[in-house]
Image (cartoon, rainbow, N blue to C red):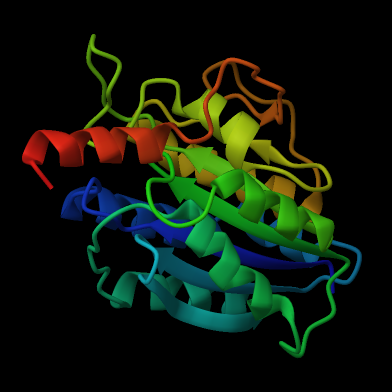
Length: 248
């Protein structure tokens, strides 16, 4: 088949219930959309395998929808239906590294043989638990797995923090520390109204490797950058500083 794709979605406490519902609804709408379904059915083999995982801290990963073959409009619609009928859960902490480490073994002996293997990470904050995220990213890339990103920069203030545990330049953090592997890219989301369009664009790129010329209002597609002044351990530092304030 054309691709094995794991959608790995942040459900940490920094995401409130309405935001989690927007995420689920956005992915469901994307799989029901004509561009995404066309990208799947007009690919080289006309079929893909997709799984949906929700993650938070080091020990908080849940396979919401296991590996599912999508090779028709009906199977794409059925995948979308499962997304909107399952209830998301909220968990503590943010470990992108643990999410990557959890997903990587899912590609082994899963019964599918894709030309590409992709992990799609969406989240609203940096790694603050577990091993360094860049190490997890590099280990996955060494296995030929691509990690793409959907950094959610949906709120902010003048102090540089989007909410507790997040950072203002999350897109730059994802660029340097999270995405990697063959053809890796990310699409930053600055407003929840952009989310459905960003998800559709991202899925088409991942499933078919192409997208029509974007409208001027569409979120940009960005590749990995060196970003020399980005600290890949900033989430861990922020967490430790907060613990010191709390006297822990």
